[in-house]
Image 1 (cartoon, helix red, strand yellow):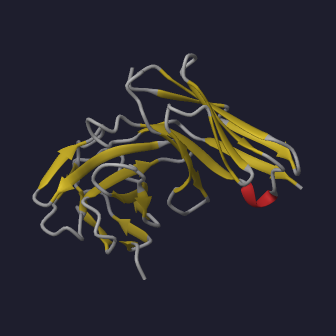
Image 2 (cartoon, each protein chain N blue to C red):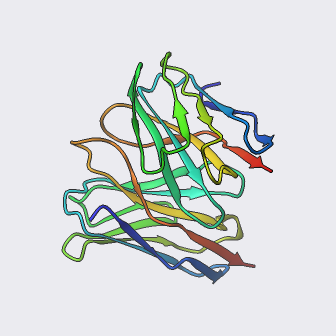
Length: 113
Length: 113
C-alpha cells in the first residue's frame, strides 16, 4: 500500500517539551515538505527537502528542526522555542520536476498545554 | 508578488447549484495552478490543475477557468453535491526554479441539501 504515513494522528505534550512528528513515504519521491495548518487558515511551509541530507527553511521555520537522513523519512521536531505549537501538521511529498503535484499525508494534530 | 489571493473565505451553495471560487496572483512567472480539496481532519488532495497555455480544463463536474491577462483563475463545481462540502485551496508555483507551492488561504464550501 503506497503512500505517506504520519504518526501519531493525535499528540499531546506539555509546554516546554520537544516533540518529534514522524513522516514516512514509500512513493520514492525526492522532495518532502512540512506544513502547519491553523484553524480556518491556509497551509504555511515550515521546511522542505529536495534531496537526502539537504533541507531548506520555509516561511515559518523558527522553533522547528528537521532531518533527512533517508529518502523515505523526514521527521519534524517541534522545539520548546516554538511559541504556539498547537496546530495540525501536514507532511507532503512530490517528485522532482513536473507535474509538481504534492501528495499529503493524513496529518498529526499536536496539542500543547 | 508571491501571494495568491483566494475568495470567498466561505461559501454556501444549494445542492445542484454551481460553486465558484476565485484566485488571483501577481507573479507572471507562475506556470502551474492546482486546486486541492481538504476534508476535515484529512490532508489536502489534488483535485485538478492547469497550466497557463490553456484557458479551461474540465474533469467531471470540476472546471478550472484561467485568465492569463487578468492573472486570475477559478474553480467551478457544477451540480454541487453535499459530498463536495470541504475546504478548497488554490495554489501556484514556478516550476523551472523550484517546486514550492504558494497557497491561497482556502475557501470553506458548504453544500446545503
